[in-house]
Image 1 (tube, rainbow, N blue to C red):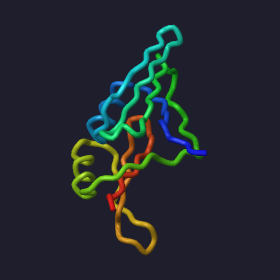
Image 2 (tube, rainbow, N blue to C red; image 1 turned 90 degrees about the vertical axis):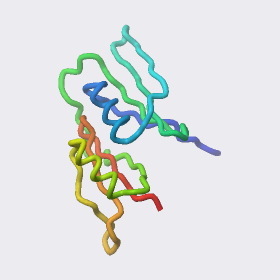
Image 3 (cartoon, rainbow, N blue to C red; image 1 turned 135 degrees about the vertical axis):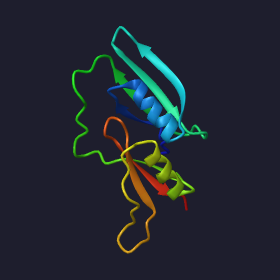
Length: 127
């Protein structure tokens, strides 16, 4: 049996702030949007140029407090050719960025950037 991964959903407090982060910092494009005013939420789907996989931003209207990300979720991962330039760009954009890191015994090949809601995105050097 074959499975095709479709999307990952995260809940966001400020839809416009999150859209700015994912489009400007990570180069994703909005592929579709579904508004459900009667149920008080909006779904926005973002993808890269391949369109093979999407990130779903769920915005519940007027959330009372930030979402608890929990201790089971870890991160989303993306790759980039020029890791150092990407990191510098994210620092210049004012986002929270970690130092370059590597697995034990390996040279640095990734860093993390944090989105406006506290979700971590791992940026990995493309092989």
